[in-house]
Length: 367
Ligand code: MUC
Ligand code: MG
Image (cartoon, rainbow, N blue to C red; front, side, top):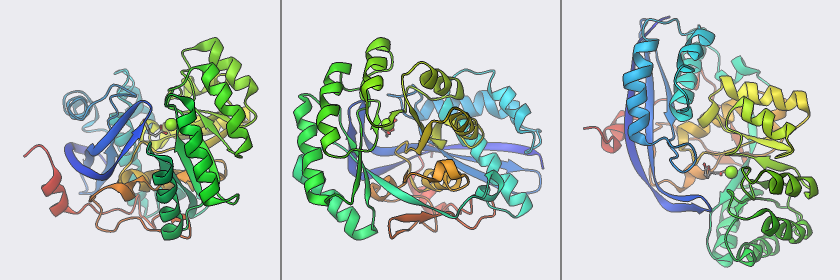
């Protein structure tokens, strides 16, 4: 099964509720749909999610690198020659979203060709994951109301709370409001997207401890090397590296240097192939992982749960799988459905998704 062509289709779909956090805000899903065509007529798909504030990629840069560099390197190659393909992609530094979408589209093709789901190919551990919902910046009461609505509608009982604003008390008020609205049975954890200094974060952690938070993610910049190590050493809960650990090597350095004790795995930036490398490295070192969200749409969410459910270590914690609910529309003919706080993997083969061509025609930006 050989690659005959690759499409990189930029599209934009507005969010009904923009997501705001310490390092940026997202008002529309300005993504790139990647389709890999093969000589037997099969098509593999995946979504590239450019995040300029995290990795420097833009929608235009994703399209350009796929069309000008990666497509000429991959056309004619066997879909199953993953090591060779990654060797070629690796000649270009960076561009994690573009590379990851290509990688996941190839896994989709591999699954289609043997009639098995990507989850089965990756490890086949389970068929669903518990869902964690990410709450962006807002006033305390509004965030509590959103959490209650999400809990009552979808049965979700795990929430990641965006923090990292100044004064620190602003976010502590939010966390208190959430705990009092949701009660003790809800799991709450925080993500600062590097918004605080190490000392601000240390003060916050002391208060957050009393509210029973279970994880602390990127509360201060990893580049503040000693401050970050000092903070992680005093954290009583796992300290998660997300945007500071975007490759297997960064994840290793982060854990070994004391910059984190857990890692956020995002298929949008490490695809399936490198997400497995990060996951297996974490298992080897005894570090926990959480399946993170790159503010994915439906297709990205399908990829995250396909990977997360495939392994014991990636399905232990709730995965961040619900932010597609805030989009005004999306591209799949058969959207993911969250019930009883869980999301099931698709039956496959491959990723088991069908793109709605009419919707793609409506939202694409290149025609
Ligand atoms: C997260 O976990 O940080 C926000 C920025 C980004 O790159 O991903 C999201 C969620
Ligand atoms: Mg994060």
